[in-house]
Image (cartoon, rainbow, N blue to C red; front, side, top):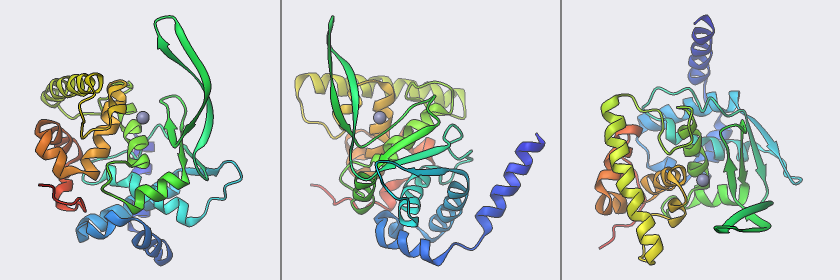
Length: 263
Ligand SMILES: [Zn+2]
């Protein structure tokens, strides 16, 4: 209890610190959604960024050097997921590893009942419940910051997985406040996930990235990308999914989206 209280006080002090002008210039220059947020949300986001940067470690991989630009561009996008909610700042995450571009990993994947394929695949990011770390490609991070409405954002995707881990399971369900919310969430996600799987199998074009058909955890991460990147289209085509995400995030990204209105 005393530890929690001290942590809260330290975070309160960090949020209240004046935000470094150099960091603000970097965010305003590179993180496009930031300019669209309300003044209140911008101030809240900057406070979260101060806590995030004080608590998380960054490590460059593959010869990559971590700069302030790298730190604030990642932090600004990750902290968008924390606005308006009580948050413990991604408690399972200690270290963010950053590669210059995509990176290669050895992967074994099942392609049939008794058939496995081994090989080297390239990745833009990953995280896991027991990893304590999250991996990102700086190339993909920069692209995500510069284009906030193409439906893809590697930072939002990987940090959405971190939110999923907060309730001790990797099941596409973040920490929801009430039993009522959990039931509504389960029903909507089950049916939306089933329709994405069906569309993927029959080759019907979808708004949601069909990578979300992999499992419920990926479905949640992909939905979060769409919620913040293409909220108008998501609201129009998946109103129930949009409503669940709006209730959880306490945000309505339609209000600050740069997404072009589609006919
Ligand atoms: Zn994922």
